[in-house]
Length: 223
Image (tube, rainbow, N blue to C red):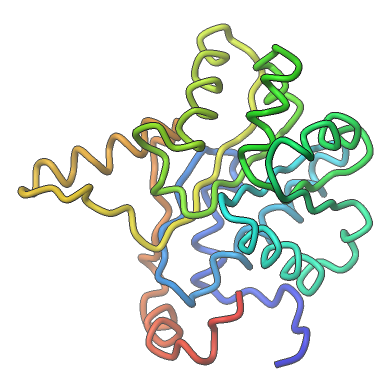
């Protein structure tokens, strides 16, 4: 497959609709259906609307961070110069402080933001961003790095700070090994609350097209 850029399918446009309205949301779609492409479409539209915006794309593992940066170069080559890849943990945190005013898109591990906050002694560093993506957002519970970062976010919200929009990406919200439907639902609600998301973005109107790509994983697995 060559570079096909951001050629959005109808179900992907549907998945992006709540985020494009500025709402915090979790984008829930099967593996291989192109959640990464949805994310970069949202980023493109966000920066068109907010030219001075700052977007963070978070993934907890370095190899995922690198995959996202490769996807950005493929899908949004015109924004590559405005983007930076930061992987690792403590050793790179000063780079984030230095680069925050130089770039528009930051693809990085959440540990880098957490360590920058610790280094500055100021959680409001989060407010430098206008939009934050949490890849595999189902990990936002217990004492996970995502959860610790969102704890800071929610404390800032209580102080009425201007905060970034939050968008989660996941193929499954999981059940946390729940042994009843009520407990499984409670787990999903907890993840939503931890991410400050009142709504989940799923495919409803374009199920036929969505099911085609979900079943044909070989066709759509890249992004």
